[in-house]
Length: 205
Image (cartoon, rainbow, N blue to C red; front, side, top):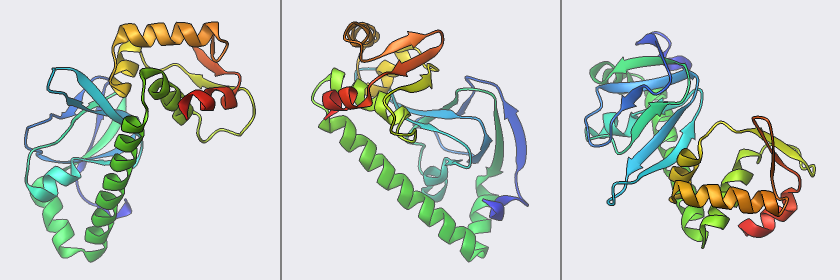
Protein backbone atom coordinates (compact mmCIF):
# COMPACT_ATOMS: atom_id res chain seq x y z
CA UNK A 1 0.00 0.00 0.00
CA UNK A 2 3.00 2.32 0.45
CA UNK A 3 3.17 2.65 -3.34
CA UNK A 4 0.06 4.89 -3.16
CA UNK A 5 1.32 7.18 -0.38
CA UNK A 6 2.29 10.03 -2.68
CA UNK A 7 -1.02 10.32 -4.51
CA UNK A 8 -4.69 10.90 -3.68
CA UNK A 9 -6.22 12.66 -0.71
CA UNK A 10 -7.55 11.55 2.68
CA UNK A 11 -11.13 12.08 3.84
CA UNK A 12 -13.06 11.04 6.94
CA UNK A 13 -16.40 9.44 6.12
CA UNK A 14 -19.08 8.92 8.80
CA UNK A 15 -20.98 5.66 9.16
CA UNK A 16 -23.54 4.85 6.42
CA UNK A 17 -21.67 6.81 3.73
CA UNK A 18 -21.90 5.30 0.24
CA UNK A 19 -18.53 5.13 -1.51
CA UNK A 20 -19.55 3.09 -4.56
CA UNK A 21 -22.94 2.27 -6.03
CA UNK A 22 -23.76 -0.94 -7.86
CA UNK A 23 -24.24 -0.32 -11.59
CA UNK A 24 -22.55 3.08 -11.60
CA UNK A 25 -19.10 3.98 -12.90
CA UNK A 26 -16.32 4.35 -10.34
CA UNK A 27 -14.69 7.80 -10.31
CA UNK A 28 -11.60 6.26 -8.75
CA UNK A 29 -10.42 3.86 -6.09
CA UNK A 30 -10.98 4.16 -2.35
CA UNK A 31 -8.24 2.88 -0.07
CA UNK A 32 -9.45 2.09 3.45
CA UNK A 33 -6.85 3.44 5.90
CA UNK A 34 -9.05 2.80 8.93
CA UNK A 35 -12.58 1.61 9.65
CA UNK A 36 -14.79 -1.02 8.01
CA UNK A 37 -17.24 -1.03 5.12
CA UNK A 38 -19.77 -3.51 3.76
CA UNK A 39 -20.00 -4.70 0.17
CA UNK A 40 -23.53 -5.49 -0.97
CA UNK A 41 -25.56 -6.28 -4.09
CA UNK A 42 -29.26 -6.12 -4.87
CA UNK A 43 -30.84 -9.45 -5.82
CA UNK A 44 -33.46 -9.78 -8.54
CA UNK A 45 -36.23 -9.91 -5.94
CA UNK A 46 -35.08 -6.55 -4.56
CA UNK A 47 -33.40 -7.94 -1.45
CA UNK A 48 -30.03 -6.59 -0.40
CA UNK A 49 -27.31 -9.21 0.13
CA UNK A 50 -24.17 -8.29 2.05
CA UNK A 51 -21.25 -10.09 0.41
CA UNK A 52 -18.40 -9.07 2.65
CA UNK A 53 -17.19 -6.81 5.44
CA UNK A 54 -13.90 -5.14 4.53
CA UNK A 55 -11.33 -3.67 6.87
CA UNK A 56 -8.14 -1.64 6.74
CA UNK A 57 -5.79 -1.65 3.75
CA UNK A 58 -8.47 -2.72 1.29
CA UNK A 59 -8.74 -1.08 -2.15
CA UNK A 60 -12.37 -0.57 -3.08
CA UNK A 61 -13.48 -0.10 -6.68
CA UNK A 62 -10.30 -1.57 -8.12
CA UNK A 63 -11.91 -3.94 -10.63
CA UNK A 64 -14.31 -1.27 -11.92
CA UNK A 65 -11.51 1.25 -12.41
CA UNK A 66 -9.18 -1.22 -14.14
CA UNK A 67 -11.86 -2.60 -16.49
CA UNK A 68 -13.62 0.71 -17.06
CA UNK A 69 -16.95 -0.92 -16.29
CA UNK A 70 -19.59 -0.24 -13.68
CA UNK A 71 -19.15 -1.19 -10.03
CA UNK A 72 -20.50 -4.66 -9.33
CA UNK A 73 -21.20 -3.82 -5.68
CA UNK A 74 -22.38 -1.03 -3.41
CA UNK A 75 -19.85 -0.07 -0.74
CA UNK A 76 -21.15 1.57 2.45
CA UNK A 77 -19.17 2.51 5.54
CA UNK A 78 -20.15 0.78 8.78
CA UNK A 79 -18.33 3.18 11.09
CA UNK A 80 -16.17 6.29 10.87
CA UNK A 81 -13.61 5.54 8.15
CA UNK A 82 -10.48 7.29 6.96
CA UNK A 83 -10.37 6.80 3.21
CA UNK A 84 -7.79 7.78 0.61
CA UNK A 85 -9.37 8.55 -2.76
CA UNK A 86 -7.35 8.36 -6.00
CA UNK A 87 -9.06 9.53 -9.19
CA UNK A 88 -9.31 6.96 -11.98
CA UNK A 89 -7.02 8.73 -14.47
CA UNK A 90 -4.27 9.29 -11.90
CA UNK A 91 -4.54 5.72 -10.66
CA UNK A 92 -4.30 4.25 -14.16
CA UNK A 93 -1.27 6.42 -14.93
CA UNK A 94 0.38 5.20 -11.75
CA UNK A 95 -0.02 1.49 -12.50
CA UNK A 96 0.99 2.07 -16.13
CA UNK A 97 4.30 3.64 -15.10
CA UNK A 98 5.00 1.62 -11.95
CA UNK A 99 5.41 -2.12 -12.51
CA UNK A 100 5.41 -2.80 -8.75
CA UNK A 101 2.07 -1.00 -8.39
CA UNK A 102 0.66 -2.90 -11.37
CA UNK A 103 1.79 -6.25 -9.95
CA UNK A 104 0.35 -5.35 -6.55
CA UNK A 105 -3.02 -4.55 -8.13
CA UNK A 106 -3.01 -7.82 -10.07
CA UNK A 107 -2.33 -9.73 -6.86
CA UNK A 108 -5.16 -7.88 -5.08
CA UNK A 109 -7.60 -8.71 -7.88
CA UNK A 110 -6.54 -12.36 -7.80
CA UNK A 111 -7.10 -12.51 -4.03
CA UNK A 112 -10.46 -10.78 -4.46
CA UNK A 113 -11.57 -13.41 -6.98
CA UNK A 114 -10.37 -16.22 -4.73
CA UNK A 115 -12.07 -14.98 -1.59
CA UNK A 116 -15.28 -14.20 -3.50
CA UNK A 117 -15.33 -17.77 -4.81
CA UNK A 118 -14.81 -19.14 -1.31
CA UNK A 119 -17.59 -16.95 0.11
CA UNK A 120 -20.09 -17.99 -2.59
CA UNK A 121 -19.07 -21.65 -2.22
CA UNK A 122 -19.64 -21.53 1.52
CA UNK A 123 -23.04 -19.88 1.06
CA UNK A 124 -24.20 -22.37 -1.56
CA UNK A 125 -22.83 -25.37 0.30
CA UNK A 126 -24.99 -24.67 3.34
CA UNK A 127 -28.37 -26.37 2.91
CA UNK A 128 -30.38 -24.30 5.36
CA UNK A 129 -30.51 -20.88 6.99
CA UNK A 130 -29.48 -22.55 10.25
CA UNK A 131 -26.26 -23.82 8.68
CA UNK A 132 -25.58 -20.46 7.05
CA UNK A 133 -26.02 -18.62 10.34
CA UNK A 134 -23.80 -21.10 12.18
CA UNK A 135 -21.09 -20.68 9.55
CA UNK A 136 -21.33 -16.91 9.77
CA UNK A 137 -20.99 -16.92 13.56
CA UNK A 138 -18.01 -19.28 13.34
CA UNK A 139 -16.35 -17.04 10.74
CA UNK A 140 -16.45 -14.16 13.24
CA UNK A 141 -14.38 -16.18 15.72
CA UNK A 142 -12.19 -18.08 13.24
CA UNK A 143 -9.04 -16.30 14.46
CA UNK A 144 -9.79 -16.79 18.15
CA UNK A 145 -8.01 -19.42 20.28
CA UNK A 146 -9.58 -22.88 20.14
CA UNK A 147 -11.02 -22.71 23.64
CA UNK A 148 -14.57 -23.72 24.45
CA UNK A 149 -16.02 -20.26 25.10
CA UNK A 150 -15.73 -17.47 22.55
CA UNK A 151 -16.92 -13.88 22.71
CA UNK A 152 -17.69 -11.51 19.87
CA UNK A 153 -19.31 -8.03 19.97
CA UNK A 154 -22.76 -7.97 18.35
CA UNK A 155 -22.14 -5.21 15.82
CA UNK A 156 -24.81 -6.09 13.28
CA UNK A 157 -28.58 -5.97 13.41
CA UNK A 158 -30.72 -9.02 12.65
CA UNK A 159 -31.60 -7.36 9.33
CA UNK A 160 -27.91 -7.02 8.38
CA UNK A 161 -27.20 -10.61 9.40
CA UNK A 162 -30.17 -11.73 7.28
CA UNK A 163 -28.62 -9.87 4.34
CA UNK A 164 -25.34 -11.72 4.93
CA UNK A 165 -26.92 -15.18 4.74
CA UNK A 166 -29.61 -14.47 2.16
CA UNK A 167 -32.51 -14.86 4.57
CA UNK A 168 -35.14 -12.69 6.29
CA UNK A 169 -34.92 -10.74 9.52
CA UNK A 170 -37.74 -12.80 10.99
CA UNK A 171 -35.89 -16.03 10.24
CA UNK A 172 -32.68 -14.74 11.83
CA UNK A 173 -34.54 -13.66 14.96
CA UNK A 174 -36.16 -17.11 15.22
CA UNK A 175 -32.84 -18.90 14.69
CA UNK A 176 -31.13 -16.83 17.38
CA UNK A 177 -33.95 -17.71 19.77
CA UNK A 178 -33.57 -21.41 18.94
CA UNK A 179 -29.79 -21.26 19.44
CA UNK A 180 -30.21 -19.53 22.80
CA UNK A 181 -32.76 -22.14 23.90
CA UNK A 182 -30.35 -24.92 22.94
CA UNK A 183 -27.53 -23.08 24.75
CA UNK A 184 -25.47 -22.83 21.59
CA UNK A 185 -25.14 -19.07 22.16
CA UNK A 186 -26.04 -16.55 24.82
CA UNK A 187 -25.99 -12.76 25.15
CA UNK A 188 -24.07 -10.90 27.82
CA UNK A 189 -24.94 -7.25 27.26
CA UNK A 190 -23.63 -6.33 23.81
CA UNK A 191 -21.48 -9.45 23.58
CA UNK A 192 -22.43 -12.69 21.84
CA UNK A 193 -20.98 -15.70 23.64
CA UNK A 194 -20.39 -19.05 21.91
CA UNK A 195 -19.94 -21.45 24.84
CA UNK A 196 -19.09 -24.47 22.71
CA UNK A 197 -17.53 -24.02 19.28
CA UNK A 198 -17.66 -27.76 18.56
CA UNK A 199 -21.44 -27.90 19.01
CA UNK A 200 -21.89 -24.98 16.60
CA UNK A 201 -19.51 -26.59 14.11
CA UNK A 202 -21.67 -29.71 14.14
CA UNK A 203 -24.59 -27.63 12.88
CA UNK A 204 -22.48 -25.83 10.28
CA UNK A 205 -20.98 -29.01 8.80
